[in-house]
Amino acid sequence: MHRRITVVTAVHAPSAPFLRDAYASLCAQELPAGWEWHWLIQEDGRTDAVAPCVPDDSRVTFRQGRPGGPGVARTLALAYADGAYVKVLDADDRLTPGALARDLAALEADRTLGWATSRALDILPDGSTVGFPGDPAPGPIERGTVLAAWKARDFRAPVHPASLFVRRELLLALGGWMALPASEDTGLLLALDAVSRGWFTAETGLLYRKWDGQATGQAAHVDPAERTARMAVAEARARALAELRWEIPT
Image (tube, rainbow, N blue to C red):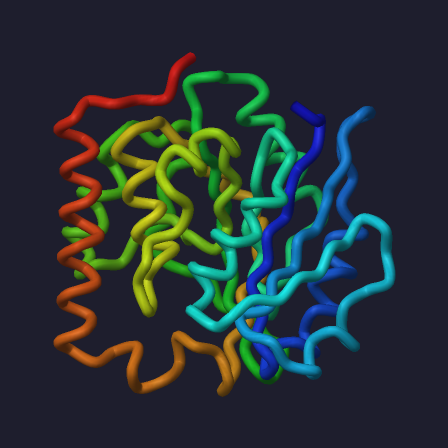
């Protein structure tokens, strides 16, 4: 397995202009000697709007596919992921300096950890940032902890799924992101929590952009009937995995 971190980004036409900021945040990352990153950008659709925003860099690969939502785009990109680890980076978000190195250090030091997350800050349209209350203590997150907290907090995870860093084999074993119109990343997080210990870094690792065009800001995202169904299937999957007692090999 290559000493490489595959960074996976789903993008659609409205978010394409933000790719330049995401790219700048990747270029600012410093990794240990012998490690590198490879950025897979997968368009959720086939338009002419995204390609002009893709950086001209040999470390960047751009592909297109028929539209199916961000979870489908990210899972398609996994076909080309050849690194030991996969890092999520949404097209409109940015990594903070050192984010990749901190995630990598946590999982390289402990084979019992399957995934890592970090503190995230919202970036508001005026450029200011807002934190999330109730971050867990830094360090290991034991199996089942995320599901329990998610249920107690009205289906709000205690760590941000957009900051996920995960072992590639584990991500593939779980089938990638859930086939849902939204909350597909939360569904993956719950599945990871069901089968493996995780890690939380208290230092901010992700800047999560809030803007009018983001998918989670649309009315359909909070439709009560759909939201109930999404939460139900995500929970059922996590509980089924936990009952099977399958876990990441160490």
